Length: 434
Image 1: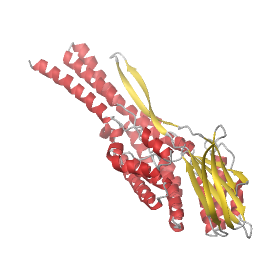
Image 2 (image 1 turned 45 degrees about the vertical axis):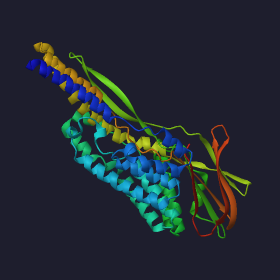
Image 3 (image 1 turned 45 degrees about the horizontal axis):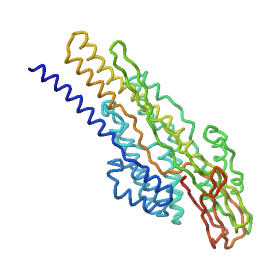
Image 4 (image 1 turned 120 degrees about the vertical axis):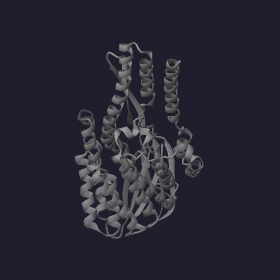
């Protein structure tokens, strides 16, 4: 009787594990929210998030803060955006600090059990958009503080995972080799461009030239990210002719990458069991935008040029984190798979049905529970384009037009009676998230 009860208990336990794991993997469908954001209905998107935030994000603070902060930015609710992005900045630091102290055993199920600590590119670009928030609020000192915070993060990017790598090396040197990946990104052209504009606004022309030189280095030293030419108008930001005003356009298009799961299985011989490795893969989202133009007074046309492909930065900076994830996944999956194989072999060797059932239950748990963490914020843009033109101070009508890859106008943002001022930063920001 005891034997039957034990066997039944094992089977029930395995079934419960299976159900619990899959129940925890239920995810919210972002399709409708994505369409709302892409259509430019930002207020509706913000209302949806606030109404359903527990269902959408559960207790995932970082993604909630970043998504809400970015949508609020697009909605021109700059103070609200700053509040959320600053909370996101703190939440990323808190979650990352906590992850450093965790061991493999603290998340034996999968990485989704941890707090989401953000990706490196999210941690960087939140400062760029917060700087733009402060610019739109005429708080130039706060905008420069955000740029300095970003510069410090860029300097520390290569050191960010040192402690985690050291812990991995102690736990398993072979697995830790997966984490030994070099990230070839330490300098953002978009950040340097904004630095040039902000410094010029404050008449700090030495710093304008320093940021210009750093911008050029971003292109020459990081070819894998900047495979396109430096925008031709950027060199003209160094000095504005007397009596002229400078109009700068910063246009964003598309949406940042998402993550998907890629799975591999390694057979364990002779048990017939296997080790399942599930890793996140960052994938690009397609964009409808083929070109962007500035049209001044319905006559003069200037083509905007690509400054930064944010998706390139996201994918490059993810390499290091993915290496860490792979190393931890190998360790975790090996523990699960080996335990299942051990019971299976023991059951076969001893002709013990109970041990065999335990082995089956552990294999079911290993298969069901080993899932990649595909969490990521969704509403950073994919690409940044720029243009600049010197004009006489005065009132202008102009528009910024987005063209499809087939050459058709798919969005147009008109500006009427815009007062172009000499000695001021006349920066216009637009976005079309398709």
